[in-house]
Length: 286
Ligand code: GUN
Image (cartoon, rainbow, N blue to C red; front, side, top):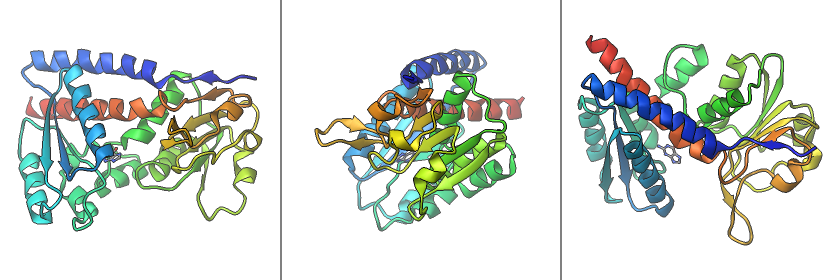
C-alpha cells in the first residue's frame, strides 16, 4: 500500500479562502478582525514564525500588528503590554510568541491574556474549556490535525488513537480533541516502555515529539492514518518530521508530509480562531 497524502498546503488554501470571505463580510458590517503578535528577543526561528503569521493575516484581510521588543524587556513591561492589548477593541487575538527570554515567566504572561482573546489556546481557561467540552479556543496545531482528519472524512468513533508526545501545546490537547470525537486514546511519551507495542494497535497515530524517526514502518499497523507534527532537520539539513516518511508511507493509508503537512495548518487555525473571536465580539455588540 502507498499512503495518500493529506496536503496541508491545499487544505490551508481552502480554509484561508473561507476566512478571507468571512472577514470581508465582517468588514462590511464595520468590524475588522485584528491579531496582535508579540515577539520578545531575536530568536531567529521565532522571527520567521511571526513574519509568517502576520503575512497570513494580511493575505486574508485581517488587521495585524507586530510588536517587537528587545530581549531584555522586563516581565512587568510585557505584562503591561498584554494588558493594553486586552483593553484594545481593535484586537481580537493576542499571541505572545514562545519561547520567551529566561527571565520572563511565560506561564504568567499567558495567564495575563484575556481568555476571550487567547487565540493560541494556551491559557489555563482555554485548556479547561477543552477538557470539559465548553466553548473556548483550541490550540492551533492539534486543531489543525483535527481539520486534516475531517478533510478525509475520517470518523474517530471507536478508533484507537495513539499520541506520541505530551506537551501542553500539542500532545495533551490533541488527546483531548481525539477523545471528544469518541476515539480511545493512548498518550505515549519518553517513559513509555514499549512504544511499538502501543503504536501497532493504533488506527490513528499523531507523532509530536520533535525527534526524527520516532515512528518507523515496523511500528505502524497497515492502513493506519499517520499525522506528523514534527519539525526537524535531517543530516543534509533538510526539513523533516518525526516520522520516517519514506518507510511509513508504504504501510499507512494516509500520511501528512513534512514540509507541507501539519505546519501550514497551525497558522491557518490561528486565523480561524482570530476570526471567531471577532465574530463573537460583533455578536456581543449587537
Ligand atoms: N512557538 C512555537 N509555536 C508557537 C505557537 O503556536 N504559538 C506561540 N505563541 N509560540 C509558539
